[in-house]
Image 1 (tube, helix red, strand yellow):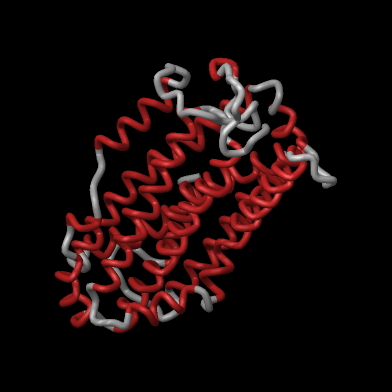
Image 2: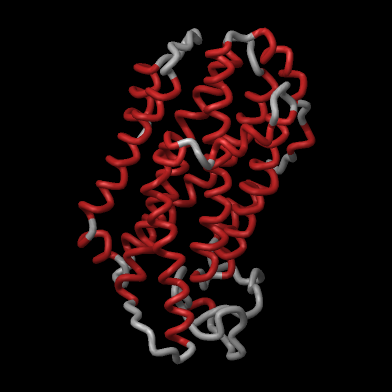
Length: 306
């Protein structure tokens, strides 16, 4: 890649790879390069919604009526969902966008980041602000809560590594005397794709199930309706990670990355499951009683839905 933001030379986008190609210039969305990605984008836009469509303040009465341990379960779960969406938005915008050289995939990342940041994160903020709590204190706790931070540590490390390698690539292509390995960069991209998949497939799902259990018990119904819409969006994001992983796995220029690093990839999932188990234990540390869900049920759900 050259001229990171705008390559002044003509680019034959029909021959460009998904990542690390010639570069980027104008958004060639006129080209039918990726029908599957284009359809996924259209489907997502067809389901577009906004945080303002709901009134989560109606759930304030449930917070007042609930036992403290149930409110703690609800809030701890919401805190982690807030962290995940913050991370998901930045992962696509700062990890994958800079090295994407397919116009339709680039467009997908912008859309993906918009949903995560401008709709999902705003929705979580609105839910918190609608409760009789100090939202600032709740948000501040996210960054000092070791149980929350530990749960996301392994995937954060993957994303951070790719961001650093993206920067090294830019400096290297600009003629800077810096060490850069495209093989190591490709490995980092693959691991970050799996990390994004874990975020969508493992970490979000146990949190969503907890939120839905509240509604089944007649509690926090508006919040659950909002999270149901978020879950719908995340299903599309998850499907895209699977699509991209499968594409690269079949690409001769990338297939060896999967073979050589299979153990490390599997380790990411094992670490994520163990982190989720510890998180679930943290959620139910006060023996919260919510019909239809408990520590054992959540752990079983996490393992079964990989």
